[in-house]
Image (cartoon, rainbow, N blue to C red; front, top):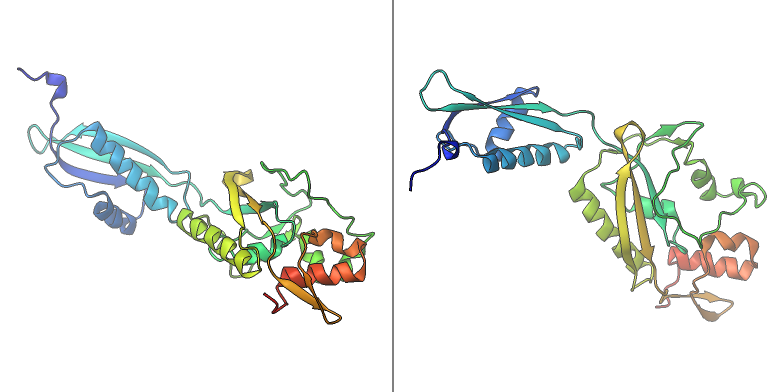
Amino acid sequence: MARNRTDRKAPYEYREFIGIKKSEKDELVTKIGLRKGSVVTEALKQNAVTQIHNYYADKGFRNVVTRVEEQNDPRQQNSAKVLFYVSKGGKVRVNSINFVGNYNLADNKLKKKMKGTKEMSRLTLHPDDKTVYVDSVKEKSDYWKEMGFLSATRTPEALDPYFRFHVFANSKFNDGKYFEDKEKLIAYYNAQGYRDAVIVRDTTYPSYRNNLNIDIEVEEGKNTTSVTLAGKVIPCTATPFWHASSQSKKATYITRNCSKNASVNK
């Protein structure tokens, strides 16, 4: 059966990356694996584009635009040259990490365990507090009435939407490191006595200036540790940490020590 002329594909003899550094070009040549003499097909070009985007995503560039152009190579008959026009855009950084369902471990404790996923520094009077997941149970305490400014932990949390300064933290988003950090979150929960803790769901979505926000919903489960008060072993309860200041000193003691896993009674 005769082959249609439209099915005929010319082998390429030349390819070029336009709009990027020479060092990046050299790395992409190896990653894409395009070899001279390969037949230029749509599948080959699409695979090359995917590899280009993956390469830059690992470097924090998630808004890469690539245009592929195929031209006849005047130097050789019946051959083509493939041009890749690459626009990296700016690096995508993590604007905010929002936790839902963490009734016993504070946001700042969980964020510290995410070594590879850090929020960017911030100084603003108009914070971007948009979230996808909303916790209908989580109550917002009155920071000033409860004298939260006297707490070394509550003050940074209250100021965080407006002021955040991370000197050495790399806030660019990386899919691989984010996956590892989610595993670290569960490991941290387990270490605090929450053996059944799971991440129910998580999502990333655009923030201002082409950065992104992260929402993570956790289900903590029961705490299997206990604390000792006046010689008595008391099981850890599911008392949310933000209620502690409005309850008795006994409940505050139990809640704080369970959250910190200060007890050796397991």
